Length: 308
Image (cartoon, rainbow, N blue to C red; front, side, top):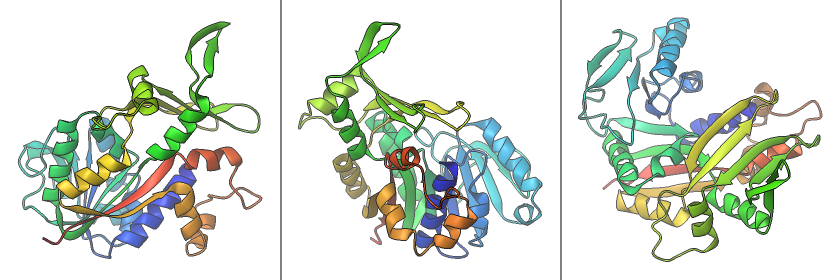
């Protein structure tokens, strides 16, 4: 799955960014995407994350890489649902200066592209958090700039949820609740589990016109090939109608919204060399059924800031 996810991100970067871009990478983690951007010869890379330890690892990665260490790279510790990159004093690191406190972005509308990979859904626990995020996004991007993201596909999740209706989860012979969404491999091992909060399940199964769509919480558990939990976190659905409304409200146009499976189908021929180079396919030149099913849980987004 990691190889497939990295391929999708690489294709997004190639398709929706230009050489010598000023890049803002939100929820950058340990800086795993810096090399993808470096291949596009960025002018400036700024990575922001809520986890200080991950940023320290990212700084170490830069220092150990000759090419990256000579680049203009900034790392910022902050929660994008709570702080402003243009107004708040935050903990920062750059290739020219060690950890220090300062206002990370010195002028508004200065980034050509903003990226947020597999983390956009954390911005939607409530309306104030989402509003703060979109305000920061609008302040950061230049007119005509692009926001690219990968996140959960709410429509596919609802389809999977509907298939579980009437089922129950049984533990030690006892019914403990409604059946979760589970995806299993050919050996019957559960690789992905999605458990809806009771209120989320009720809102999805009995939708109301008055529901604004915030706070649709679920627990997402994804295991890697060694039965270790790669992800086990609460996340939030982003209903498509709510997303379009928020984008329009904050001055953005939706350029692309595609399920991973559709996106892969549209781009696999043009970027087949990357499929092979990044080891996305198995020895048979295919993707396993369960990996394909898990890929279908996600979507790609490309959003453009309006020129006026």
